[in-house]
Amino acid sequence: MWNAKWPFSVAAIAMMVSWAILPRARAQDASQPVRLTITEAIERGLRANLRIQTAGTRMDEAAAARERRLATLLPRARVESTASLQNRSLAAFGITAPGIPDVVPMFSTYDFRVYAEQPLFDRQAYHGWKASQRQEEVVRQDYQETRDQIVRLVSSLYLNAQAAAARAEAAQSRVSTAGELYRLARERRDAGVATGVDVLRAQVELANAEQRLLESRNAAKQALVSLARNIGMSPGTPIELAEALGFQPLERPDAVAALTESLANRADYRALAAQREALTAQQKANRARWYPRLSVGGNYGGIGRAVGQVQGTGTLQGTLSFTVFDRDRDGEQREIESRIQRLDYQMADMRLGLEEEIRTALLALESAADEVRVAQQGEELASQELALARERFQAGVTNNLEVISAQASLERAQENRILAVTRYSDAKMALARALGGTERSFKKYLP
Image 1 (cartoon, rainbow, N blue to C red):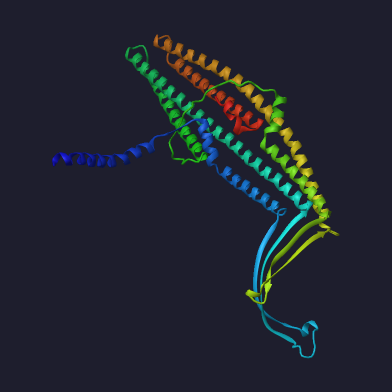
Image 2: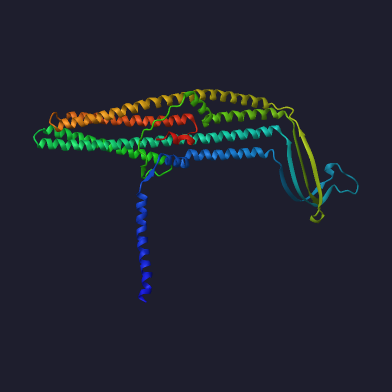
């Protein structure tokens, strides 16, 4: 009896223990930071950004408008069923005769009928439908343009977080170096080869380094909060960057070829081109207002004095209509021509703007590459200077002013390297944005 109950008791105890542990485990999982690569951050931003979501609704709206324009070219049918009780005044219609009452007594009518119509020739409706197709393409390109902009935004925020993390790491390294200098100054003072001023000076340098570390850590946290907010995460979500700030050279493209690629890929330029095509279709619809319209329609059903007396009747008719006078057509034509001219101006200006954007990005890319090379050399030289200064101070050749000066030089060199690498990475993404198709091609510009 006892052995039979033992397994059940073990299972019950295990279940209770698991229920007691699970909430704590879930709390621990919730506190774990989310490790994000730049690609994952961009994908989250593309899913959660409000501008993309609203642009998607506009695209759905444009598709619905196109379907409505198409409906004007398709057949329509409806069913009507009426039952009426009425009388008529014959005298009112001029029907008077001896023995015929002036008012017909009440009578009932039942009518069940199907109506249908089909446009056969309507050029205005046809070109209106084609214009709605091009307008849908405009909204689709605007949607893609929004997505490309979000790729650029999220990459900049991630890069800003990388730079802030690099500054915090460099600040931590400087705190360690300042701590070593402070320890060395105390040892030298205890040995009688350094003064209390050296110790105080090293202590001040350590305090300054710790202050800058706190500032850099706070800046890094703020950068992560901004990144989380723009990729659809709670700003309080702990985030860990899976990729550190790095330098990877990019082959510089030809400016002329880059401009050609940009005109073919930039969604904002393609949206203007599609908008011009939509206006051209509207021009054709405007001219078609003078064309005849031909349609066919009819109805068939049953009518009678009572439900049991209903008899089949129907009508088949064709309709041909012409517009004889329509003053609105001239005003609409001038309005569309003005819009097309305005778009031509905008497209010409955008071509110049795209060329400026590409050449600026290429210049920034080339300049930042040189800055990275010089900054790396400067950081190596500053590290060597600091090492030599520490050796001189340790050997008693000089005081620690030389070491502190070397530390300041290294700090400037580290900041120069971080700035240069950040500018180079940003210039690569700026070039990707200028070339267009950023969502498709951004991965090849990432380190």
